[in-house]
Length: 118
Image (cartoon, rainbow, N blue to C red; front, side, top):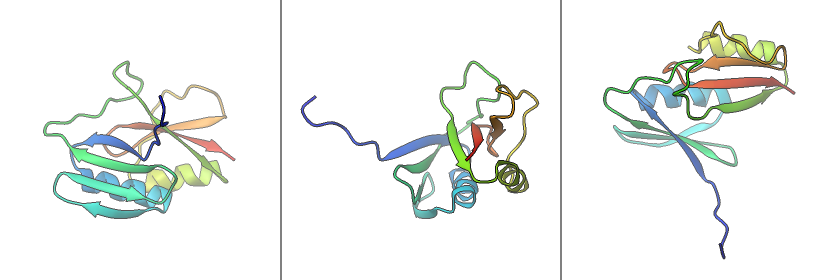
């Protein structure tokens, strides 16, 4: 390829894109920058997050072979971050692979993500 591509945004399907964007805005400290009834963008990192409405959307669950991707976040205080995310609406699945290196959570719509210690 002559001109390499630059990744700008990771987009997630969602039943309620505004609510999911608010969750990730709270989790990352990033800003909701653009939205309409079907799309919401959260910006503040080197790659932005976006959420699009899909009627009848159901999250992939965890663990589940239908899971296609997940995000990893690093936190200075992993346990504190986990507690704050749970208070914001994340769920702590029973299945936790990997020992103490990371904690798997799911967002309010069931997308899995991991919190790693710094």
